[in-house]
Every structure is written in C-alpha cells, then in structure tokens.
Figure 1 (cartoon, rainbow, N blue to C red):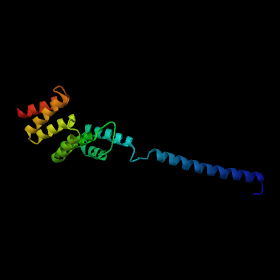
Figure 2: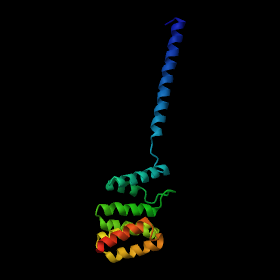
Figure 3: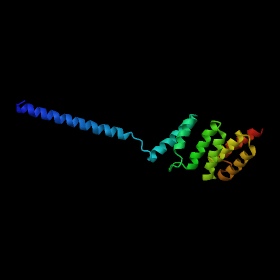
Figure 4: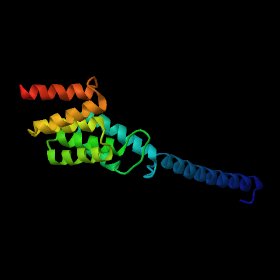
Length: 165
C-alpha cells in the first residue's frame, strides 16, 4: 500500500463508512424518539380520553375503564374530572358493577353537582337497582339543571315512565 492513490482511496472509504455509521445512529435515534410516549404529555391524555370514548361506543368497557383510570387527576381543556368519573360510572354500570358505578357517579357529582351526564346515568343506575324514588329525584335535579327539553331529561323521563308502567 505504498501507492498514494490506494492510500487516498482507503482513507476516503474509512471516512465514508464512519459517516454512514454516524448517520444511521442519528436516524435511528430520531426515529425511536419520534414514537416515544412522554407520560407528562397532555396530548397523550387527550388521546386516551378519545380512545376511551371510542371503546365505550364499541361496548368494550374493560379497556375503556383502564383508559379513563389513567386520566384521574390529569388536567385537560377538553374534559373535567367529573367527566372522567362519570364515564367510569357508566362503564362499571354497563358491566353490572353497580356499587362501583354508584361510587364513581357520586364522585362526579361531588365535583360538579350539576353534571348533566352523571345526573342522568345515576338515575338510570337507580332504576336498574330498583330505587325508583331516587331515580325520580335525579330526574327533578336534571330538570332544574338542564330543562325538560334536554336529551338527558327526556331519556331518563322515558325510562322512569316505562319502569312504572
């Protein structure tokens, strides 16, 4: 290897290989970093919230519960803690876990006594657990908060009416 052109070729080849290795390391770090899940990132909370709602629509209540439980004590502009507890109550009620459902609805109402969803759903829970008077009380509270023309009032009113017939 005394030939200068061979020495230059070898030097260029080594430098090129080093460049490729460094570039591939950089690109792999960028690619892996782009998919990371920062536990303190509020956009992840928003994604969990939306996914929880989608899971409810698909009647996949257990996975929805795990999404909503992650959101307890997490702040957002798109949902309140009362919303989270309301959906936890809803999912537990759909699984016939009535005691847990009631606990979550009551937590939602403790945070926001005028939470329309929690008022409707706890009324439905009361009907499912044969507590008609409590369901009627929820309906009256719903009437004062949302009015007789609200979807929630109309729905709970129909359920109570059908229950008593």
